[in-house]
Image (tube, rainbow, N blue to C red; front, side, top):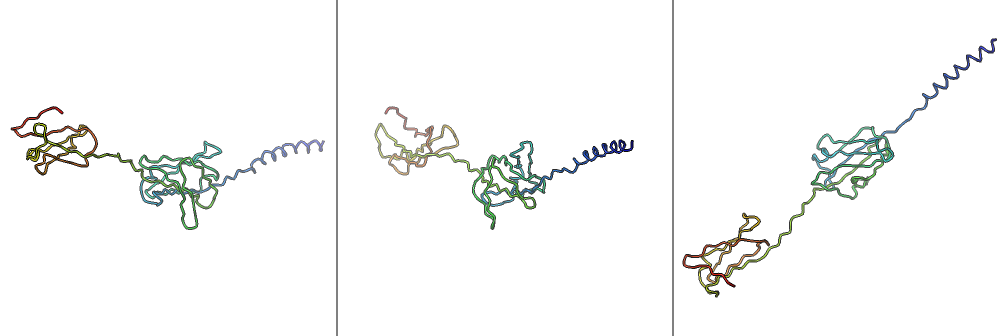
Length: 222
């Protein structure tokens, strides 16, 4: 009778040990620190660009694991504490419209890093030091419209012939742009040649205006 009692008491003790043994298994995730430096044309400058440009890190193995880094001031530097698990991450950010990303290498003393662009993968592999992410941008240069220029010459004829007189000298000819009436160009004759020239007039269509002397009238023809 005593032997049976001992065996029955051992069963719940074994079960209790089996349940408690699960609590000794503990996942130890190593966390790292991240620093983002935003450069403009290769230099770290104080501005509000990074302040308005959050950086997102998305794990390459688990897309639901994302971390958004934000800059709190105009330092163009983001620093996180030891809060991001070590591993590979896709870097994503939205540049302001008037900026574009630059590639290349940044050298700081013995340290050399490649500038990260949107969509690149970075590896966080340091637990006790900052994992550095350098982003280089520059202000986008808007292409200036290419404007072509021409030369205008006015010949004043009297009865179909070019005759030297002071008529054109006292009769300025004005060209007014059809697209922009504020753009006007005036041709003045400097002598009695009845010729007037003007260079560097932008290509386009112009309305010609002039006031002829009272004793003259305009003729058509070729």
